[in-house]
Length: 89
Image 1 (cartoon, rainbow, N blue to C red):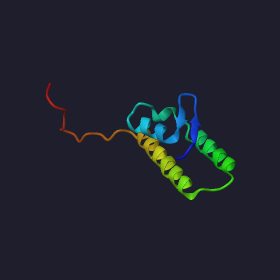
Image 2 (image 1 turned 90 degrees about the vertical axis):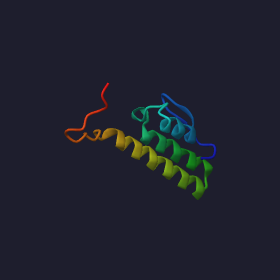
Image 3 (image 1 turned 60 degrees about the vertical axis):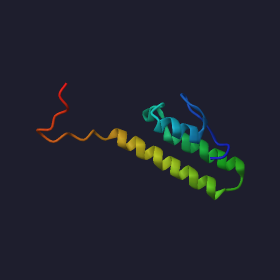
């Protein structure tokens, strides 16, 4: 993501750094407005005046990954089958 910086309330910097921080759990995915990231990306594309397909493809992968992480966080945790307990203390 060459030279595309994201400006959010709790993060400012390159999109790949944002992805890294989310994957390492240094930034909570619940605090990331994906729609705002998309809007900023589209604005950056308009400023470039030419569509670079490599950059567009990288963005789509990152946006899809962010949505996948966020969707997984919204789902309830799987329940343990009856009879299975955690290790004894």
